[in-house]
Length: 282
Image 1: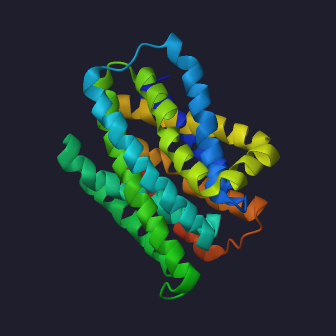
Image 2: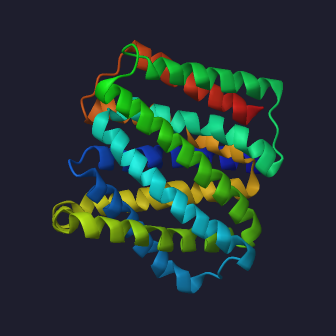
Image 3: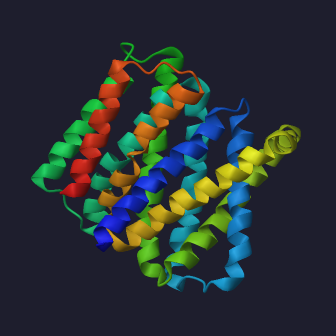
């Protein structure tokens, strides 16, 4: 089995895992506590493994700290997007827009320029995203806020994807980079959550520690696989494959959260996934 096929299959697994932990967050009333619990659980898992792994090279640490800052913006936008919109609506916009932005950013940042076929993929992604954004006419009210926060989430996804893609390539040790990032990134998020929602957060932990633990495993696995993939493949290609999670996210929203998932969302999700696959296969 070729490395390319192995990477592709692992990114599809990462896509399903990512949609899974987002389902846990969207399904809770207190989404800030939910996402903090998931990330804190991931930090504990990573910290337990740190003594057995060499640290990343010094040149990669600036990328780890920058990624932590960008992730805070990502969490804030993601929680807000889920507060105002459905998982099957906000998730495809946020995750589907990210490869488009990464493909654009990767050109000057990593010297990865788009081919004509990849440009077609970008057009398909854009069409799918616009279809979702204008599904109910011009976005306004909660629908408009959901679209706005979902697009903001995509910007932060682009930011941490490019940051970690460049950082892991300088780390000399992909696993060390991944574990240190996971161990450190939850600290500021946990501090902010405890400062503003201490009682609610600890109540959430008592009541939902099982799903938080499962979400932590899924979150670590999903992004750990993605960072490793970016160490051996192109940034746009890896992110594109991983963001096939839009189909999983849309399906999970319909199956487990009783969200409406009509033909418009189906076609839009297929367009986003098709465009992402063109970015990857090219």
